[in-house]
Length: 251
View: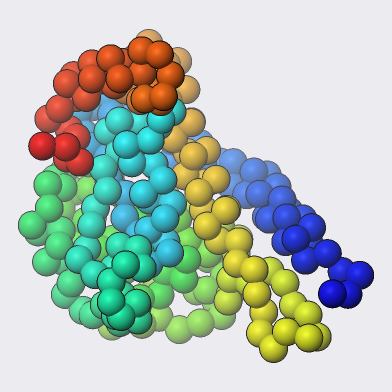
């Protein structure tokens, strides 16, 4: 291996991206966290969606110790994660017109809820249609995406628009088109994606803002505790029972 240290280079790149979103997305994070707090306080429900690898930051905030118990995962068959076979099917389904509307119409989403849609490129039919249809239902939409894609790629939705064009609030991950932070003369393609690191941080920063905002208003945030600490299961049982009508990941 050369004198270059790719591990250190990647971590430096990820840290720089995190600094960018901390400094340049602070206002949007505050607005998104406040919207989540408003939704909780007003009796609404919270949902998160992402397709493929963008589903990872969505899953990371559902039934999570230290997270809001009211955050539910909105699933679309075949596109959540990479467990579908073949894996390429998930990418193909993201480009199918009509799929998002069918999913939303059969979901528990209703007016007054908030939906976080995560899509790195924001260019495929699924996230665009989901944002459009959700807002038509009276759902508020937070989009987590890389705005750079809108200026450097073309939309795959019939409207020619991107996810960012149909959101109440947009969180820009600042990820470069292609999602690869490193290059080497000896490696034929760019490598080392950082979108999951940055997007997960954006999600957690937004939920942290929501919890603190609720507390500032005198409302106890519906937070979960780790089941691996003493008293954690009893705490979670109380929270899950208190908000049972707004939690959809348990029967």
